[in-house]
Amino acid sequence: MIVRNSQTSLMKTDELQKFIQNLSPDLYSFAYVLIPDDLQASQLMIDCVQSYLVQKKPLIERMALSKNKIVRNLLDETKAHLFKTIFELSKKRYQQLKMSFSEVEQNGGFFALELEEKAVLYLKEKASMDLDQIEFITGVTRGELLARLYSARIKMTELMPNQQLFTEILPDQSRGGVA
Amino acid sequence: MSHDLRVEPVTARQCIHTKNIYSLLDMSPKDEAYKNLSRHIENCPVCSKEFQKFQTKISAAQVYIPKAVMDRDLRQSFEREVSELFKVLQLNEREALKHKVKSKFKTIDQMGIEFLGTLASKQMIKIYVVAAAMYAALKYFS
Image 1 (cartoon, rainbow over the protein chains, first blue to last red):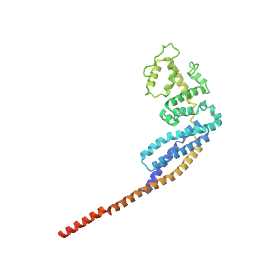
Image 2 (tube, rainbow over the protein chains, first blue to last red):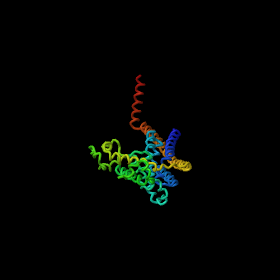
Image 3 (cartoon, rainbow over the protein chains, first blue to last red):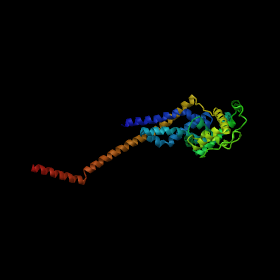
Image 4 (tube, chains in turn purple, red):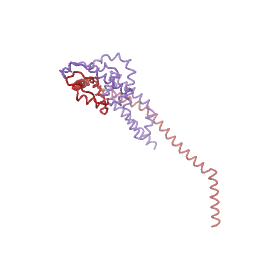
């Protein structure tokens, strides 16, 4: 019975481990948006997983000994928690590493946005998350979130490098700026 | 915004509601404000034109939001690190399992001791004596 329990618990943590490993493309993409350096971004991911495991250790230990429903719930929450941890860690590191990112700021103006603006715009447009999830990850209120999304969008359109793109798309409308 | 937004005459070049239309992209279609604003855009050529322009710009800008791809080496290295972190965690998990098994055995032991205690209690001894007396009486009179 003990052997069976042990195998079941190992299977459950294996499931969580595989789930986190499979999230690596999404985590990396988000980490890179916040800290645009491949090595720093991957280090951020590792630190975020470590921090998550430390924070959720009691829950994971309980998960290993509990019913499948709790395991399912934990897996569902894991992605959002990992994104949240990446965002929190990157906020602390961003100021220290900022000087080394100056070269990447030429990417269509996106990297010139504020850290929070980059995060919300990426999560909304590329990660296709809903506003509730973004609120949880960034820890801001709905009003602040909408304001950040708005300002990020306006800045993106202003900072886009190829302004003639608009004149090609909308020859008669390109004269009017964004209010 | 509980009532319909007023539509300016078709000839107007500006509309006081234009500044609000940009928030439409992030509103929930269930919101009352969303319904009012989208109804207004349908009827107001100024806002409709401005909103179309904004949407075109936003979709063009989406190309510039990066989605970085992790290379194979980084991915493998990440997977190794995660595996290492879990190995450390599993030690603690085995400890938790041991603890749980031990506590189960303790409960069983406790129940056994309590059962023996009950069997040897004063009340039970009285019952044994009464039962033995009844048995002896029955044997004697039968």
